[in-house]
Image 1 (cartoon, rainbow, N blue to C red):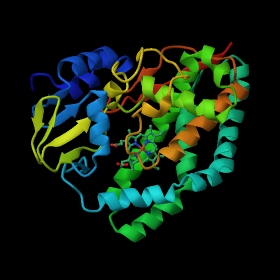
Image 2: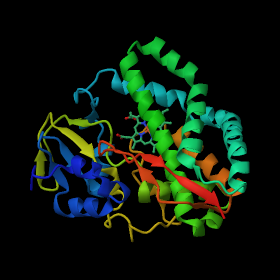
Image 3: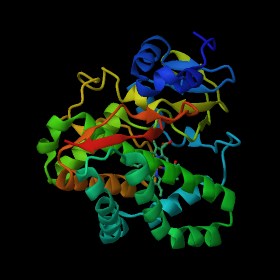
Image 4: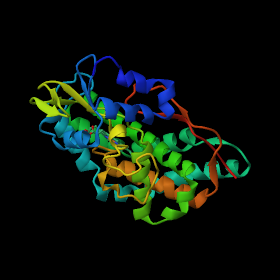
Length: 316
Ligand code: HEM
């Protein structure tokens, strides 16, 4: 097949925002190395996506704007990763907890009074804003050292949006799978496994935001991807590949999380995951009987990300 179908356009349609998985299953089974009308290749099988994420020499990142290799990209990405080490993220813990405590203090009385609150607008967005405001010195340092403000801003926006969406994903899983709340309890290792499964099962990034450029001809799934072609990975399809995960459509936090591909080669994943973990543990401790008050509302997207617009919840 076929440039006949506009995959990212399909994924952006309202009917696929809430549940893109039937379409992604179909694509992976029928056209796992899909060539789009503009000559970009979309990979959807677990093995191909994992291979392309690992082979950073053959599939080097380009920028979304130009889809060409950007000389400063790898350097900047490494600089962000160096700033957001696990040790540094650990040092941020008290501040993140303080911000989260303030957000929950504001919500608590309203929830207790029976109000329905939008956890996207009232938890994910303000908490991420506070966390990123605390990091503002970091971005100034990067701008001074790398003198490429547009690229830094682009990378930073990716991190901000991913963190909002990551928190939304944690909250969605908390609301959707109440039976598993007691399974993870306050055990940090189990909380991480719950989050890994949330990101695998119903993650927020459908497709890698930054395209790769093939540095040589590569054959995948019987299709030759020519040197110079732009390649993107459908993480959400790979994470539901039945060849990699038993019962991939079932949410099962006890499964081995090592195979999931949810954050690709993200350089800020330690901070993102830590923030998600604080939110999940905080919700369980402060609002254990929280339930969804309505279906979440999804915003229109480019087809690469599923962004939540509203996450209504209330206490029972
Ligand atoms: C739970 C939260 C997060 C999730 C789910 C997430 C997910 C992702 C994914 C799937 C990618 C694409 C990876 C690839 O193409 O190989 C990505 C890239 C990226 N993320 Fe994250 N991310 C999160 C948090 C963050 C944070 C906190 C930052 C920075 C402060 C960040 C910075 C970036 C940047 C700069 C890129 C593009 C550059 C690259 O690493 O190749 N992310 N993220």
